Image (cartoon, rainbow, N blue to C red; front, side):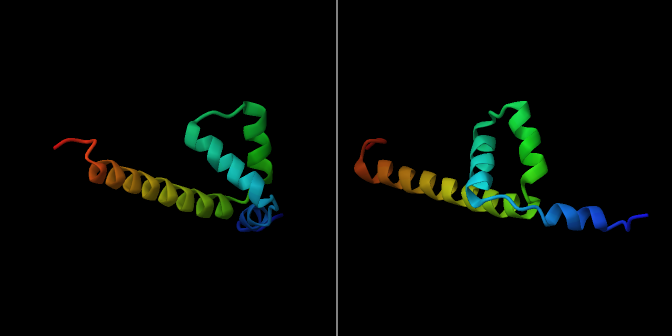
Amino acid sequence: MSEPGDDLKEVVRRKASLLQTLSAVGWSFFGVRRGRDHEQDMAKLNPVHVLIVGVLAAAVFVGILVLLVQWVVSSGVAGP
């Protein structure tokens, strides 16, 4: 019989490349993913890595939006 934490340890030991993790997070930002690819991601990806990459990607996205807004406002295109 397995211990309650054994399943969690198995999930955290998953090894997927950084590119695979970035790809899965990138597709999730667009909300588009084939069911078969989603199932493969669920089997291969480490949820801790997905969480870290997701938070970093969201921070980069917000930073780019802030810089874009600052650039538009300072250029005078947004209004008087």
